[in-house]
Length: 199
Image (cartoon, rainbow, N blue to C red):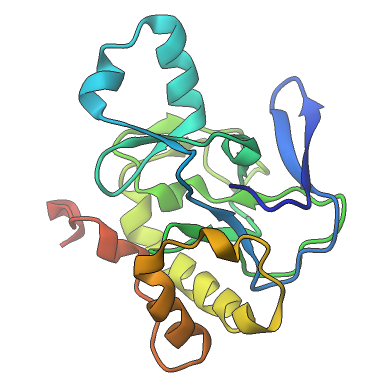
């Protein structure tokens, strides 16, 4: 589920829609949490879909560490990619704002952090950003996203968490310990098997 202080807005023909803050979302706030309304689909099921439904699933879902396609039930599926994102995923099935997000600002995540198993094109943000996100990108950059998540977690206990009730109970004690400074954040990479090229 996406943070409640958000709305869907049309951006332009190239990008389509995006998710924008309707209120101030301070650093350390969970911006999205996986919940039991999000649909998880086995790859074998997805591969049998007709072209019309496959087009939608491939556009709006992501593949999790178990290899399942996750299709968000709400506005979460419209969060766009950015190489200069303001939200980052964690190893605990939630994303966090690692810097303050102001009203009217778009919520974005770096799609490279989802450890994609296939290359795909993205819109360039400037002349220096790549046009292709590759399967290698996650293993080249995951430490950057770990640092961003660690930065956000410093403020976790200091801000309101409207999505706190949706946290998976198996992570609750770990999150409390991390937010209190007693434990370190698990790396995003801990959820995936390291490929040979990243060894």
